[in-house]
Image: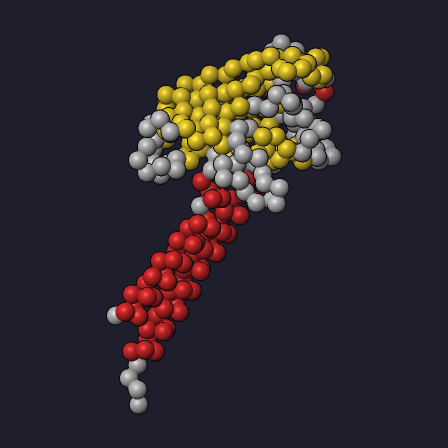
Length: 248
């Protein structure tokens, strides 16, 4: 019996290790898909999972970059949630093809709804035009729980390439494919002063392959972890069988 207890302890440790490997990739606030083409109008979703067993997420606050501001931002209504889009002065005017931009959307807040334990919600936003001189944009996000706890997802990636404790949602920007059609054509470029209508008309979905890659990566990690647990169970069963075999 003591051997069986030790085997069970080993199995529990392996299961915990598997969960530890799989959960970080799934638990934090992220952008889906994780990449979009430079110079494009793109639709993204901020995916917000609830990480608490005893509280619901009741507010999500996303900050937009001011060093590379986005001239056109619009949001998709989410049933049960109120949304507030805040525009503000930029630290310094930014030259765009539509003229100098000195104000832009700096924050989007969703509130009044509820993401219960074990659930997640996606908040869709149309963004454009995405900059062409950087390869990534960060969107620091604050997640508020019904108990008053606020989780600040604003950490930049670590220098060694490992994931930070509370990573900020990251949108990677890739060069536009030749003739790909993801950037807004010049003839369809929105007129200055009509950001909402222009963003809706010119919205394009970032490459689906990015979303599939992200999902495949998460699935692979989960399946790999499950395989580890199954392997440990097989070893334990085999050893127990040998110990219980009567000697000749």
